Amino acid sequence: DHEHEQWFASLNERKESELHFAIETTPDSRHIGNIWLRNIHARHRKAEISVLIGRSDSLSKGMGSEAISLLSRYASETLSLHRLYAHVLAFNERARKAFEKAGFELEGTLRSDRLSSEDYVDVHILGKLA
Image (cartoon, rainbow, N blue to C red):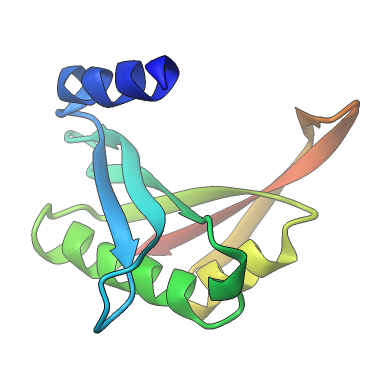
């Protein structure tokens, strides 16, 4: 649809501060989600990492944490980033566990930080150093 086309077109404008990757299964190369770095800050050598597994039949199989681990290694070894961080909604225990399995640690909680449906929810900040 038009909204998706606009979003993809805008990626080129953000290439200095964002990197996007598809998550695919092997050996069939089935697209199951996306992972990306955003707010890449060259001077401070840090970035925010986000992941989305969009296929329900691929949840709770370790694919998210594997993708997080792979991108973390790429960020450290290839991009020379020192720190990665993630914002995880407090009710998303699956996402928090995926980040923790990939070596991220809970650094703090932003109370009532995001509006979800009609209620404000806490957001956990998880971080990992190179």
